[in-house]
Image (cartoon, rainbow, N blue to C red; front, side, top):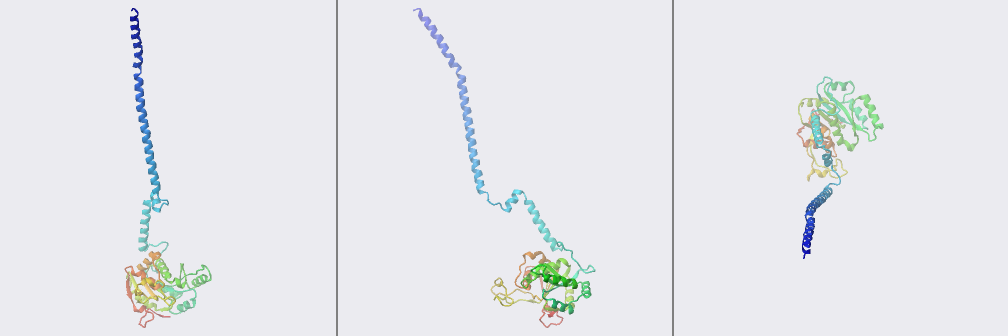
Length: 346
């Protein structure tokens, strides 16, 4: 019976000893709790980062698929930031065109007569490599030579034989023309033009483009080598026409388009002239007169002007789209019998 208190005492002390570990485990529980929260937070961030990476990867792949395989000029300009430079280039080209239309032409100094007065006319007489005899005949009849040619230039009229270069540049044909020109000094040699019968329409472009850059004149006249000119009649007619901008002067005509290959005056592009197949009104090729502004128009737009099988048709087509004043003058109809004719068959 006396041992009972001892047992009771021991039991209470054991209980007190067992309760202490329960009190010290609370911080551990809190640490475990916060560790769990931290783990959940990190896991959530990692999951979110993974999801963002997948989204970015899909967007990059989509953009890569949509990107053009070959960059256009427009794309390259945008990448390089050259849009402003492109705009300035376009503006410079427009300024250049305007300057050329006002007479400021590249690498040329326009010449007038000895008095500095504006020339009346520049007359170009078409010729070829095999036409030396015909040129000599002209020099002995209606076309001045030597001192007489210089005196005519003092009156404001320039006359030149017009010829291109040989297909075999520098051959005997070219050398013969150069030698003849050194003696007579009455040639206009079109360095960029190849002299050939089938190239006559292009020769008209070269002629008007070249003379308007070299000489400052009221009129520019293209003449075939199968006619004789009455220079005094032509000079008087042109002198009375001074100051007429847009003047397109000649023996105006039109006619049927030749559609059968092999016939004279065949037009390979006959189908462009409509069902009636008739040419528009134009000056006959024997003698064509253009005022300065029309010759400048040809010079500025020569690269884009269409040529047909014949030079007079080609010149007439260029005049249709601009403000040209057609002047039909029978004195330029070289086969006619009118008095005071400008020209007659040679």
